[in-house]
Every structure is written in C-alpha cells, then in structure tokens.
Amino acid sequence: MSLPADQGTEARAGTAVAVTGVGLVTPAGADEHSFWEGLCSGRSTARRIEELAGLPVDFACPVDGIDLDAAVGGRSVWRMARFVKLALVAARQAVADAGLDPARWDGARVGVVLGVGVGGVSVLVDNAAKLAASGPEAVSPLLVPMMIPNAAAGEVAIALKAGGPSLAPATACASGATA
Image (cartoon, rainbow, N blue to C red; front, side, top):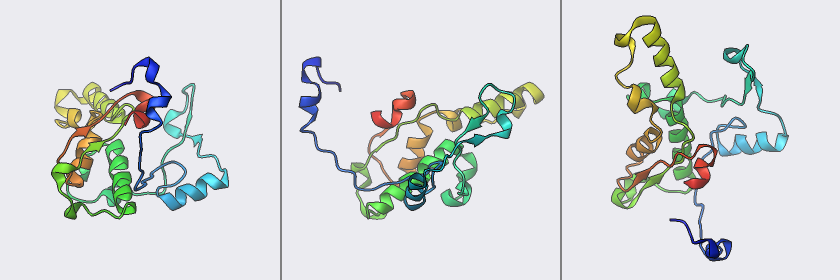
C-alpha cells in the first residue's frame, strides 16, 4: 500500500521497524563476520569472469567462499537454482542470528517476503542451450519452478516452516527495499 503524495516521509516517520536477525551471503563475505571484515578491508570484490570474456562487460562480483550445496543440504538441493540457495542460506543465518527456532513457532503466523531481482536466469540460459543442442527432451521438466522469482520465497518458507503469506516482490534492483 502506498501513501498519498501529501503523506510522504512525515507519515512514515512514525512507523517502527525492527531488524531482529541478519543473514548475509555476499561477494564481500558469506556470513555476517566475513562480510564485515571484507567491507572494512576496502577490498574490491569485482574480478574478470572467464565466462564473460569477449562481452562488453567481462567482470562481476561473484559470491565465493561457500559451498552452497553443502550449506543448504538435504535431498532437494539439486532442484534449486543458485539464487534460491543464496536466499535460503541467508534466511537461515537471519533466523539463527535472531535467536529464533522454526520448530518452536506457530508456522501459520510466520510469513516470508523475499525480494528477487530476476530469478533463475542461468537456469533459463542453460536450458535454452540444451534445447538448441539436443532438442526439447533435454530441457528440464523443472525449468519453470527453478527459474521463477518466487522460488526463493517458497523454498525459504518450506525450510523455515513458515505457513503464512509467501511473497516475492520482483522490482529489479529495488527488490530488497520493496520487500
């Protein structure tokens, strides 16, 4: 819900927000401690990426230093796109940092709002290449569930036993702020 234009920041100023837990899986560090060290060091996280060679922009800031499959664990990790794994690890960190235990809460009263910029683009690209090279039989039947932006919110809700609303605002670079 947005406020009328005449009720801008003044109306929002009285709205309380409490951050109770932090989860960070970033290019500067894969947890709160390593992120803070990386941030304070001033080191750049940008580097040339081999897969981008020959493109107008051949660098990025990838998340390194974490085995996402091991961090996520479980039997369903194979069907998760990278962006979902990143979200799940960060969400678990935030819940732990807040001192909460999903086994002890009423899941119906817990929701997930998780902003996603674009979703599983790499899943789409990989499957497009498989389609071009080998035909429709090579395309994963999980293509759509793996790439849709709300996959992250859904997997986090399942993992944390959050049975309330599960929302995934997808507003590009503003997704985190929108959430």
